[in-house]
Structure formats: structure tokens, C-alpha cells
Amino acid sequence: QFSAPRCSGRLRKPQSSPQGGCSRTHVALDRCSHARAQPMCTLLHRLVACATVAAATRRGPSRALCYRGGAALSAERTAELEALNEAEHRAECAKVEAEAWHGPLEPAGALPPTASFAIPDWSLPDFDRELRDANGDVAVHVTAAPLFSAEECAEVVAMADAHAKKANGWSAIPAGRHTVHGGWVKDIPGVKEWFDDALKTRLYPALAELFPDAAGDGKELRVQSAYLFKYDEKNRASTDVHVDSGLLSFTIALNAKDAYDGGGTWFETVDTLVEMDAGQVTFRPGHVRHQGRGVTRGERYMIGGFLMRADVCEHGRRSVERGVAALGG
Image 1 (spheres, rainbow, N blue to C red):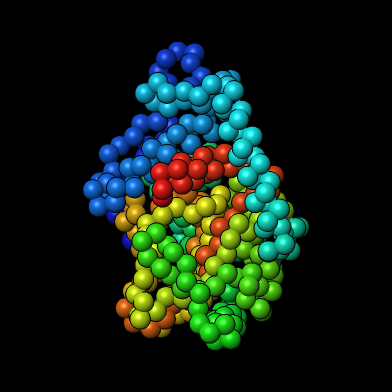
Image 2 (image 1 turned 180 degrees about the vertical axis):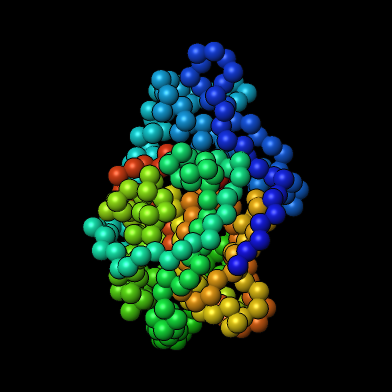
């Protein structure tokens, strides 16, 4: 369930330089209408622009990274940063190797139909071409019917609640200016095993079908992180508007919409709120700006997963994250 009026703030797709024969790419950057309320918005747009340019120029004949306005990195500095990105990628792959299932897929039935909407005029720092749909748009896909039954979702919630009770409460993690509650899927007995099977039989097969050029056959997909969130009326916490630290992302709704008021996932650039019933899943490129909304009544449970590929280093994402960290974000 969603509606999608367009927002005026956007980062336009890279265009080839008008200078004949130049291998550089430049980005046209619009003024974001959210910049006053969220100063990091324009900054993020510029970091994404730089990262997208970097990815684009690596595919061209020149290895020099450049940004509109004349700034360019030398071939030596480019090679140094790429080596740093690749070292970080190998280290992250080693860290997550045992935290979630990966391998040949075993699809369990057909993917339910999906309702999809586009994020127009948006650029991605990695796999920008491969993550676009047939119309050339960055798309968000929401299953029109549950991918998981209400019964298995209820069992996952029960196992998570039992784990939290044994641990004397839910853990808390920062989400920008706010704090959200839940637990890492890899640390919750029973949920971890269910999640591993879901990756093999339903989640990875769905991603391979929806994003075939980015996900490939699914064997190289890795869970960078997966968190089971619990939103409740006591905390009423939302996340900040953000992008995910992964190539692909998904959100699994674990309980029914009538169990709470509020909630949903809001996509900033198209002013779209996605609300799902138990078992429905949203699949999307990771670098799309969104926000998890708090609830004003009841409890909302969901799992958010960020994914990477073991065989491909996301130079753009790692450059963005390094830039944000250097600026204290």
C-alpha cells in the first residue's frame, strides 16, 4: 500500500561530458528541497555524485577520478584508494562469512507478484546500470502477497521476544539522532536458523529474479548485516532518513498492520510511505534514501537486511562511507 507523489530534491543521472572525446563524466546536481531541514542531505548528494563519477570513469578509458568543477585524482591516488577499498571489502567478507547462509540457491516456489515504483532521476554509487529496471529507473519492489506465512512470522516474533526476555530486554542501537531497539539476527537462536533457510529458498531467489544483473545467480550474495527491529509506542522512535550500507536491501514485515498505528517505510525523494502486512517484503537497491517510521500504538516487528557481493568491491559505497566518517557523520 503506497502512493507516490514526486519530490523536487533529486540527483540527476550522470551525463557524458559535452567536451568531445573526453572520457570524464560529470554529474548535474539539483538543489535539494530538504537541505534546510536536513543539512546532511546536500552533503550526501555530493558524496554520491563523487562516488558515481568514480564508478563511471573506471568503466571508461581513463582511470582518473574526477568531479564536476575540475577536481580530479591522480592515477596514483586512484590506485591507492581502490586498493584501500578492496582491502576493506576482503576484511568485511571474512567477517560476515559465518554470520549468514550463502551458496547455491534452492528456490521454494515462485515469487509472488510485486507492486513496484520508481525513484526517478536518482544515481547509485555502484552498479548504477545493473540495478535499473527495463525503463531505466531505480525501482523499489513490494510483494503484493506475503512471501512468508503469518504463522512463521509469529513464530519468529515469539523466538525474538523469548531471546530478549532472557537477555533482560532488547538491545538498542543508534539510528542517526534516534535510538531503535531490537537484536542482530545472527545472535537470536531459532531466528538465525529460520533466516538462513529464508535466504536460500526465498530471499536470495527473489533478489536474483528482481535484480538479475546485480545479484547474478545469487551464489555470491552475502548478508552484510541483518537486524530484527521492534518499534513500540513507548519509544516512538523513527530512524533518521538514511541510505543502507549495502548493494541491495530488503525489509520483512513480521506482524500485521492492525497491530500498531504509524510505522511503515518512507522513501524521501518520492514522498512515498510503504506499509506491509505480516510476511510481505520490500526489495530495493541499498542506496535509496528512506526512513523507518515510529509507531504511536502497539508494536511493530520487522527485519532489515543489507547485502553485498563477495566477488565485487563496492568502490562507490566505501568512498561515500569514508567521506561521511571523515566529516563526523
